[in-house]
Image 1 (spheres, rainbow, N blue to C red):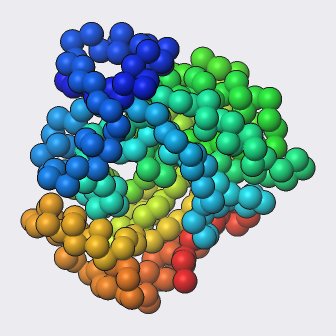
Image 2: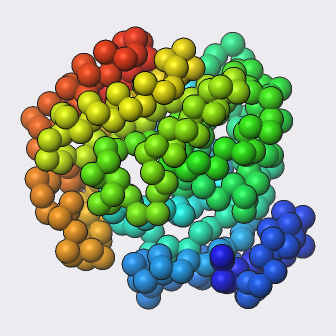
Length: 329
């Protein structure tokens, strides 16, 4: 249950705002002029807010769609990302968002049409144009609240040169199952092995439940994908990831898997410092990580070993042209 909703006065009468508020009749409503007065306020504690986050409904002004970071892609000609929402329902200890944002509140920009218009302006006919959702939030976890996917599917249904990735750790796939499958919409599920999930991915549905959500989508004609990003060092790394791969591929047909990406655990050193301060008892932040220039990650040699091993192991299950290792320079 969301206990408190901050609403920008400019969107108070927006139909989407009215719809969201109607689904939370017991929440307290607080009008605000601009979301930054709440979300960007310096005197906040992310860890405390995460225990009972509020919802902020706002209007985004400009910069709707941004070029994706280098090496962030799955074979398309052009790669973009967009964030109609900031922050996540889940509480993964390695998530860079807790180092990036001062607030743990969920921020939803209700002017979805502005995002879709900007996406439309960036589509190059005859090319594969990818638009990645889920960079700054989980794409599906709060779909019952936001309704973004319900708005996006009809848009992408008429634009075959535009590909949408919905990246998630959620099992909230009902909205997709109620729609005819689209060949240019890929639901990408993120995974770490069982021990890492239990230790660091708080509130995230179990691996098996996510696999069942993937399987259901595939059985209903939807393309799915796998995201092993970031790889997390743990005792018995090779055995743990081998078991994870076997668990997934024994249930989800390779023919319905668009791609698998593999990426390292990396974050700016300032984000890492903030996260250490939030969770000083968290072994993840002090075990095996090293500072390299302005970033914190595993040592370069170990990082490369992990990604190369995972790539080779995935090739036992997927063709090489479906595997995209992401090893930034």
